[in-house]
Image (cartoon, rainbow, N blue to C red):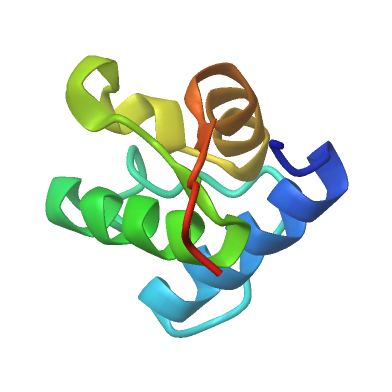
Length: 87
């Protein structure tokens, strides 16, 4: 089961803040502003997968899919699959 939008939003804010070392504001651009780079996007995906117990297949994703919290929520809702056997 995929978490609801609120859980995804909270996890996205926590994960992004962890990567950049400070809280993330609503609407704050992450990739296009240079706060995180493409390698950090992969780290962000890993953090989200662990926090939400999902699998996010990166093959069809672009860094821009993770440019702000709203886009992260949309992306996770669109592509995430439950991570069976993970707690």
